[in-house]
Image 1: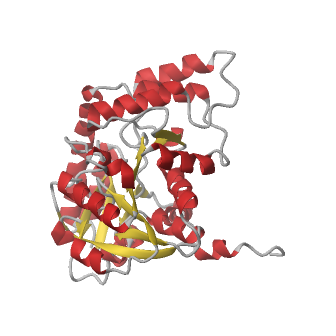
Image 2 (image 1 turned 120 degrees about the horizontal axis):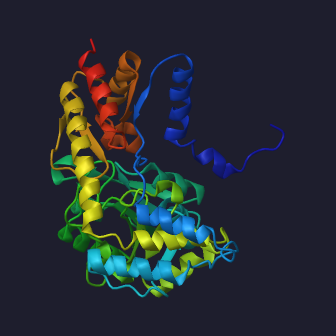
Length: 386
């Protein structure tokens, strides 16, 4: 290479699932019938009314130009009504909501808006790898805080208080939790808001899984005073089957949203208007939609549990979200070793938990984003393992 890359590029690796997809593709080319139970990309379509809205709007002659950086009013209003209906949270659609091209984009925008080089960022272990990757890209000083199985995959707040918090500006949280499936609780959110307030830390709650296998969606913004020290990301990828559409949002007080907008408005020029109209339509879906979605995921979860049983893994049957998280037997050096063994023997890929942090080293994660016949075949192969 003649042109040397930026130093920041050396701080991060290619995303694990991007690398792993090449490995699985190579296996397929060699003749292996690979079953991928790894990444959580919903395989079901959006509601018919959503697709119809997109198709009808896209046929109009006057919808193909640049769109507002803050999203169209119908979409912001849709997010506001969605938050009020499901979370009991009142948001000003003009000043407290910022539509995003997926919540993953929001992680970068928030870090760029608030972090100077050398500032501290707290990231959970286990947790979404992008929190750490983006922290490195913006030159932050990353500190991991552990989530504990015996605490329901919540942090030990006494341990948090003993950490060196000097210079820490952001703390990432993710409930309902990925990868563990642990639900949010009002008490947890209260403690996080209190922690952020006392230490002057912006609590960033990533909340895309709250509707999946969960009867009581919660938002951290429902806690009194949360808007003062919190920003919440949400997404339509999981609960509305719109992952490829790239729709997310951030919500907080007007000052925080305005700060994030200064970064975002320099990064994109809005989303295709018909897609925004369709997303607004999706936000109107009622309980019947979520009930049907979760009925399907419950059936899939039964097969994922059966696979974990066949592997003699231990798990919490009350977990929610889009994955099943389970602990491997002591005989295995690590979950990665068992994952590799499963793939070698059966062609079934199950995500090893080490990619989410050291606390996940002995855990496997199965995605529920596969049809029942795929789970049946995966279970059959695993039961036939030596």
